[in-house]
Image (cartoon, rainbow, N blue to C red; front, side, top):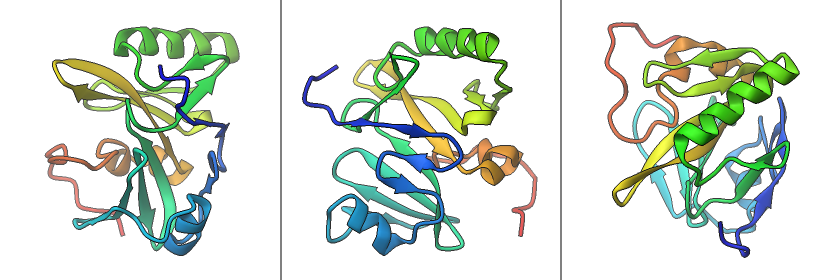
Length: 168
């Protein structure tokens, strides 16, 4: 982990670092101190990618999910444990231990990712070169509780196939 990597505070139910659920795109740009995202991604959801390893997903024009890159995104600590850029098995075990100690509700996604529902934290993995590293994703409660959204976040690459209709 780079010493120069920015650290963001996990704010369960509210947001991550300077970003808060419910912010609009202009507020996100202001909070990240940029004029605009590096890229806007098309598809079934609004998504903005920022140069510092931050991806923001919107529902109805408001922040609903924040995904951080395993290597270039800000670091997030949970009980002193760095969540980004770790061996996914180590990170997974840490979350299991954390959940047992704190009585957190665990959820698993179709791809085997683990979520601590009460924190809105979903731990995904990301391929970096020839290894996989952990990456934290903070999700608004409504999206984390919805199997449709939860199994498709972050929404990079092809979504998990299924026959479920998109919720309205």
